[in-house]
Amino acid sequence: MNYRLVLTVIGLALGSLSLPAQSAAVSGFTITGISGLNQSPIPVNLSGFTGEALEVIQFDLVVQGFSLTSADSAQYLLSGSNGGNLVGRAQDRINKNVLVNKSYSGANLRRQAHQFVDDFLAALGRNGIGNTRIAFSNASGSNSEIYVANFDGSDAAPVTQDNSTAISPAWAPGNQALCYTSYRSGGAWIYLQNLAARQRKAIASYPGSNFSPAVSPDGNRIAMILSKSGTVDLYVANLNGNVLNRLTQSREDESSPCWSPDGQWICYAGKINEARALYKIHSDGGKPQRIPTSGVLNPTEPDWSPDGKWIIFTQQRRGGFDICIVPSTGGSATVLVEGEDPSWAPNSRTVVYTRRSGRGNQLSLLDVPTKQTKTITRISGSSSQPSWAK
Amino acid sequence: MKAVKLTSLLAAVLALTLFGTGCQKRVIGPTPINKPETRIRPGEIHNELPPFNLGDTSSGVNSPDWDPNTGAHAQSGKFSLDNSTQDRAALAIHTVHFDFDSSVVRSNERGNVDAVADYMRNNSAVGLLIEGHCDERGTDGYNDALGERRASALRETLISQGIAADRIITQSWGKRRPVDLGQNEAAWAKNRRGEFVVLHAR
Image 1 (cartoon, rainbow over the protein chains, first blue to last red):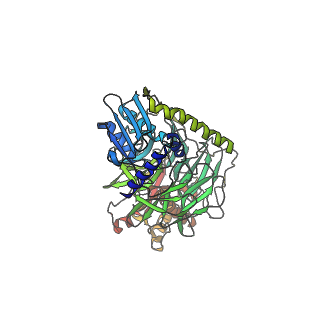
Image 2 (image 1 turned 30 degrees about the horizontal axis):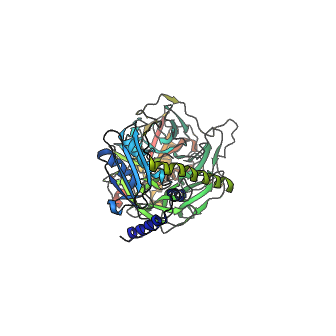
Image 3 (image 1 turned 90 degrees about the horizontal axis):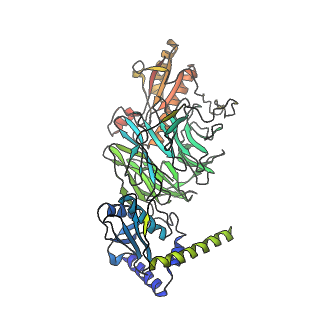
């Protein structure tokens, strides 16, 4: 492989210059999110780990842009043991710098393995996702409930048990509360449920449908799709309860709002002059601006990356759906993989999305720059509409 | 700003110099993992607070519910799903079907809408729930909105025929309630629909 040769040459050059480890690591601080699409994974070698710990480490590495390879072609060597507690060591194979050298205790072996990968990523100047969680809707029979799980699908637990239809969960900042739509009262209402306090309240129960809640990054406002005025429009309310702004007034349907990380903009899927497209509108109101997604058709379900640079969304095409990405300023869109309803991880790099499996759906993770995917642990039923806690 | 950035960069370099070189010389002792974890107990909700609507204020500062530009009629009526019983059979034969990606009420569906309007005129005490549905070819988010748009289009048509707005409520089920599970045009055409449900106040 040519890139390995190139890497080796670069590595040798760096080694011969005896660059101190910290300058390589400092340059790593500029690596936030995605520096480009269509990147090759970074080759790493694993040795000494077994069983569950090995599975966790492999999984976490692949969904964050690494590939597993032999020791002589790897850029990094990850070695250790997991008889009892986990001991982990990460070393740059070329310049021999030791990046991590730790033994872990507490929690359980899975969590220790996640933490080891997070420590390795931290040494590279990146934020790991090992301790993050997702929420999703899981349909079984004619009902669907909201679940929360670790990002790899483990430890899934229902947060609703209403024997009704609960859909489209969205995390509030701080990750202690979830918004979602449920039909449990008869109508499609939006609820806010505090997971720690085990409390919930209906916060939008207007006549018609109350859909697609999305909490602003500062936690003070909520965007949602309401039909209370007789048409399907985008609204923003203050969560303290005394202002409701209608942002769009169209005869067409707006859907799936999401916030820019600075809270200034709301991106949504809409239709203006017969053009189904992504639009953004100032969160205080204004004129909708089209976000061009040239090269793909019928975009829907946008999600704005936490670093602000990208919008990931679903293309609806004849015969299926694709996960696509476009710079948040709009432009040429790139098709990544087949699937729908993507949600960014806090690392602005990995996304969780839905993909068809038989007649139902299951959740998968996608490392956007390398297009590597992994299916997460399934629970019984059809899982969809994932939301990654930021 | 620049000074702050430079300072933090220097601090990072310093930290890495200390830590980075330190790591190479000694084995760090056990790293306890004691990050707090919020364990979620399945389905436990201890406190169900009474519903309220964000934006509800006595002063009525909200945006107007009737919009002269679109002619839309606000939904706030005498009927709600929790104070009514549903009769799904009475108007079942008048289900209206839609074209792909469309909420336009086709001219060949006008007979069904007219029949529903007649029923509402002849049964002045009842309310009407219109349920909007979609085929499976769009995403959930898109279909939830499109289903509501279909229901709203039927509601507007009935209002234009003189049925009082406060007797009609709408609801979307997106693609979650198909009548035909087939994955072909014939099945999809059946699933793109608006259903009429008669509401009797309890």
